[in-house]
Image (cartoon, rainbow over all chains, first blue to last red; front, side):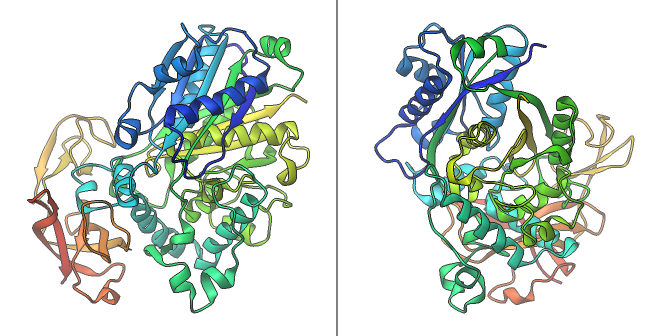
Amino acid sequence: MKPVVIAGAGMIAFERRDDDSLVDMLAMASLRAMDDAGLGDHPVDAVIVGNMASGLFNHQVSVASALVDKLSLYPAAAERIENGPASGGSAIKHGYQAIASGMADVVLVAGGEKMREVIGPRATDVVAYMAQPEAEYVYGVSLPAMAGMFARLYMKKYGVTAKHLAQVAIKNQANGLLNPYAHIHMKITMEGILTHPDSVVSNPIVADPLRLYDCCPVSDGAAAVVMTTPEIAKTLSSKPPIEVAGIGQATDTHALHEREDPTDLKAVRIAAEKAFAMARCAPQDVHVAELHDAFTILEIAESEHVGFFEKGEGAKALANGVTSLDGHLPINPSGGLKARGHPVGATGVAQAVELVWQLRGEAGERQVRDAVNAFMVNFGGFGNNVVATVLRRES
Amino acid sequence: MITAYKCKACGQMMYPYHYRCIKCGAREFDKVAPSDSAKLLTYTIIEQLPWGFDERGRVLGVIEFTNKVRAMALIDVDADRDEVKLGMKLSVHWEPVRDDYGEKVYGIVCRPA
């Protein structure tokens, strides 16, 4: 396989974007990535769009073809990749495969979702379509509900407390304050969301034991990267190309109840192992990570399953500041899904965009120092289809 | 009531149906009726329900029947949610769990035994 790099990265701010269509958002993010790569008039061989549910949210399908049209990139090949909340990570994987196989020289990968076109309960319902239809969906299960059932067991087994969960939210929203692209720009405190009696009003239960501030917001947004070979990247721009060093993907049972140990995120564990093996490095070599904190419990659980910490040690590392922006292993410097937002299909690509900026030293006030290896987890379904990726700056 | 499936090759219990065993990949199963009692493995109380539900405080859980079949279920505890405890014994019923445009959709409903 040929080596593959990300030559350009760009995104638009995640927020409620009533005035922009999904394809407009994808186009705006794509132009930023193309300009960042110095693509100029260089042909784009393929356009891959990560998106979960444009048909349901926006009454539009074939959005990759629509994006080619908006950007006048004809006759580029175009496909939409749907892998639930891991659509973005999967789209990057498909971009990798296209370059590595030699079938394409330059691929534009864009991820996007416009969720706020529908009202909140409808968005919750559409996201719940990823649950097992007759064994889960019929009961009115939501993704927060699945996370709530998981959290109850995980907290009991590993001594994770409501305070630990709140610490994830506080850390990530503090990081989000430093990220102009983040949906949530609000400082929160332990008193405000947990210890003050009024916190039952300011931070109500969504799916017990998870509260409002344990859940990511519902957002609109898009992000994009330009993927190519190292040789072509060098002819386009003087910016350091970022190597896609490893990608791993794994699946697990659709229904939560069929997992032998429901606290074991097997697909996260296996996807991470594969990504690290391909990148020929270990969790201990990672300098900065973006983990899929759609719910605060997931940042803690994933940090253990990918091998950063032993089981039961993730919450302690968090409490000790290890995963803070100035800690030994900063997790979610962007603010994560918690603060940046989670336009479902955009998230995996936005994670990669953040890590490209971190590895190049372009992350502004939230810059992590001297990062060479970066790692991301894009978590699909409730952990039944996970993509893990290692990005690396050439040293 | 639901039908569970027991792999003829390895004995793995499954619900819902899979064309191949989740453990060994074999394709032949015995149909198994779940027992009429179960215990609660985990649960949540949903305050923000998806479209289609006009209620708050719906309790959903994962249950294990005494014959080891596992499933998601609606836990009916009326107003007394403090009653819900991990490991609690449950009676199992087959009743409407949602209303789909006027049509009742049936599912597993559990009550404290």
